[in-house]
Amino acid sequence: MDATVRDYMHTQVIWVEEDTPFAAMAAALGQYRVSAFPVIDKEERVIGVVSAADMLAKEALGCGEDEMPGMITGILRCNEMRKARGATAREIMTAPPITIPPDATIEYAARLMYLHRVKRLPVVNAGRRLVGIISRADVLSVFGRPDDEIRGDIVGNVSGSGLLIAPETVTVGVKDGVVTLAGTIESRYAGHELARRARHVQGVVAVRDRLTYP
Image (cartoon, rainbow, N blue to C red; front, side, top):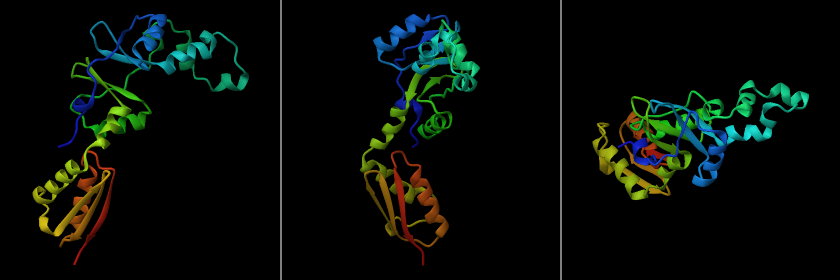
């Protein structure tokens, strides 16, 4: 069964309201040892994210008022200058936020983080209200799954996948998350499909296809 965001997310989330002052957020970063806050509106919907990187613009760019060297000024986006001038969460936040529902797979969460280059995702329900947060570390923790559990799932794929593979003809080995499939089976399609499914089993690091065909 695919692992979902609900299985790995944190439900105790430090969030801020859209009118939270900059100084209060700066203090909260140290107090709660977090690096970002989801921002919620009056209806408790997630409307953005304020990260430490967003807030750093104020110090780095002199509150958006300092003169910068010509080349640097040319490449700084207006968005960064806006954040440097901001005084509240709404004025500094990155929006719209990249969010994810709790029933999404961990694989999908990893893909979102990778494509959007974000370190965490607010988890929201159908009404876009905050129910949790999931980080890169949470997503990567699936690779700590025991080898015997991984092997059990893949053996289940062999015997119950509908691929017409006789279980006794396939050997499944797992070491440190690396799966080795060996044996002789009749169908090349079935072998390739089994390897593909094994790659998507929770905790699998890699698959070594050693299957042969008569």
